[in-house]
Image (tube, rainbow, N blue to C red; front, side):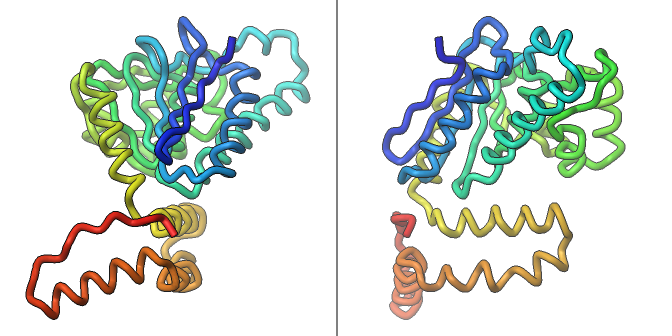
Length: 262
């Protein structure tokens, strides 16, 4: 049985965790995630939705296969996870994650790679790694710190306390909290809107934010025009800018534009 499902329709890719009952992240799921990312990268997909089947997003990594492995074997396994997660994070299209129920450990770290997170009111997030005496192996603690600051990220990681969706929204980890029964519809409506937007500009924003996260504001400023100026040669900018200029000269409201992503 597949641990991960991929559906591509209307330039939207939906990636669903599917390893009941806890959607644990196992090596099979990483294989299937890598395959899915290759398909998405080679397609005309313009937005991605990450979700999970069942009442909970994920309890985290499947630790059973870790028992008895050497440090070298464990490191190799964790590096495979990290590489797949990094590929997911660097997709040049908007990525939205939806979360309901429990979202712990590696599942939380996967969600943190999305550009935006929509959570059901029932959702709870957490780093259980401290209960095993290890760290957030896939970059969770510092990706949370990037959003909420060092002190709060330290508290959540060092206590392994479950954190509610409302608190995650208050501190800026989660973008929106919606009723459980509305989550799928609200998220899909948002993703559909993004899929009609300026895909190349979205990719540019993601690239600039990645540079800022790694090297700071000055480095992002240095890269700005190398990344931004090619956008002016795209069909999206030529169409959008011309439409805005014509409307301004005519004293009319700017019309809504459906971009083609090129």
